Every structure is written in structure tokens, then in C-alpha cells.
Length: 279
Image 1 (cartoon, rainbow, N blue to C red):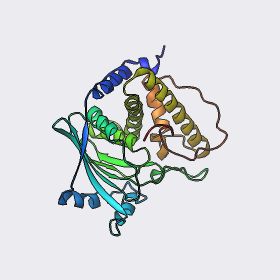
Image 2 (tube, rainbow, N blue to C red):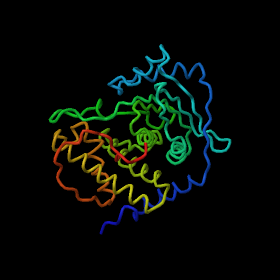
Image 3 (cartoon, one colour):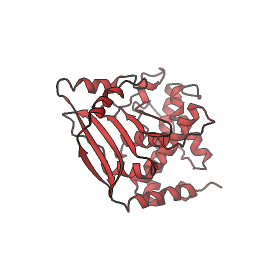
Image 4 (tube, rainbow, N blue to C red):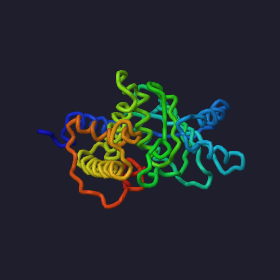
């Protein structure tokens, strides 16, 4: 018999680890960029995964002063956990939840110093017209190198914390070496959303239950919309790895999935976490 998600042993372990990070104080300090870091923000914008050129659009604003770059360094006591080069429109007041990001660094990458280049482009994830294929340009928002916490890039503001956790998992050597990219991405995204809910719940079991139940319902509705209106049916469809695939991972972990009714219309937003989830 399957257990509740909050009673599965690995969930309990994650929640305990999250509670531990909340017993620790983090603080962030703004520091000037080095010459190498100023060059880095241009170099990292030249990546083939940002097919919409979101990072390059922001960098164009450096010429007329409409874009600003700041460096944020996370400390636990005297230990540096990581740093973020934050590129954003000057008119934007948006800031990541730096405290939550400190918990992400500590929980997912406890033994590796993290470095992130973050291009805070406000373009949301939106599905194309009905019957059209969903591709990287509609979904992607970050990248990194396996086992390298120094090469994380985020280039979309929407769901930046979820993307950070996803990329931190890749960077922490969690990818199985004998699996293809489709399974790796499905597995990583499934775990990222579990961890995200646990962090937002601060490790409190009943709050996690609430968050994760909402997350499962949101994910299943997204999957149904993609299957019905965009014909995302198999691992050969690009979107499958981030939506349908994680459902299969959750099932394999023994997580009980809620039943949802049929959708009356397609879901336009492709965000992977439910709307009320704090960015």
C-alpha cells in the first residue's frame, strides 16, 4: 500500500534536512564586480540554450543604462556559500528571495561553493497556439554543467528559485551517468519540485503536505493540457521531459497522485509550479 507523500522515508529525511538549514543564519553582502566577472556576464550570455536571447536583450541595456548588474555573496558565518551576478532591468524592483536562495545553496550544494549568473528577464513561460509543438523556447530558463556548481546560468525571472534548485541538483552530481538526457531532466525536475515545496514549507510536515498536494494538482493539469492540446505523448516530445516524465518519476517513488477532472480549455501558462508559490 502506498504511503502519503509526507510519510515516505525520503520525504521525512528531506524535511529534517530543511529544518536543519532553518536553524542556520545566512547573510548576503553586495560586493563590486571584478574585471573577470564583468567579462563573464557577456560570455555566459552566449549560450545555445537561451534560444530567445533573453540574456542578450538585458545586456543591450548596459549601453544606455537601462540594465544594472550587482554582485551578491552569501555567507554562513565566515564561510562563503556562493555568489550571484544579478543582471536586471534598472526599472525593476524585483529581487530573488535571497534568504531562500541561501537555504537552497546550503541544502542542495553543501560541499560546493555556488556561482550563478542570473539574467532576470521578465518573459513568462507561455504555450504556443493549440496543436503547435512546445519546445525549448517555451520552457527553458537555466543551465549548468554536471558536477560544476560554478557554471550555473539562469535567464528567466519566472520560477527562478525552482530553476536554481533544478540546476543545483545537476551541479551536485545527482545525474545518473547511465541514463539519457530525457530521463535525467525528468528525474531532476521531479526532485526539484519536491525540494522546493519542502523549502517553502520550512520543513514543517503539514505545510509541505499542503504545498505538495497543490503542486501535484497543478502539474497533472499541465500534463493533461499538453497531452490534449499539444499532443505531448512520449519522450520524443520535448516537453515530456519536464512535465509528463516527472509524473512517472513520482509514481516510481511511491507518491500517490491525486485524481483530476477533464480540462475545459488549454492552460496558457507553462510555469511548472503553482501560481501562489512564492518565486
